[in-house]
Amino acid sequence: MNMARSFNNWRKYRQTVNELDRMSARELRDLGIERSEIKAVARAAVGF
Image (cartoon, rainbow, N blue to C red; front, side, top):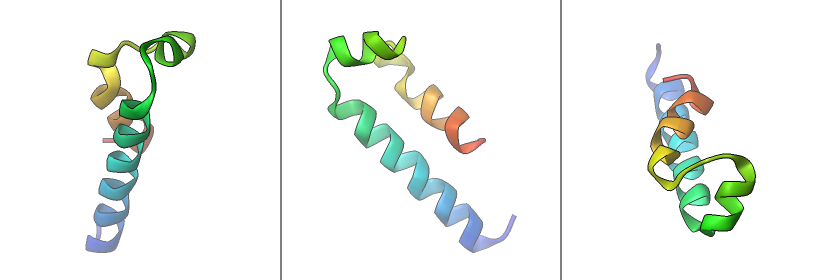
């Protein structure tokens, strides 16, 4: 994987984590996500 792709994946991961972190517990529950799962969900979304 090249450096630019790695950086883009990292940025997408961080953006996903930040967006999910800003959600309330109710919003996360509506999506079927527990707060403790945010990082795992973000990793899966990016393909890590």
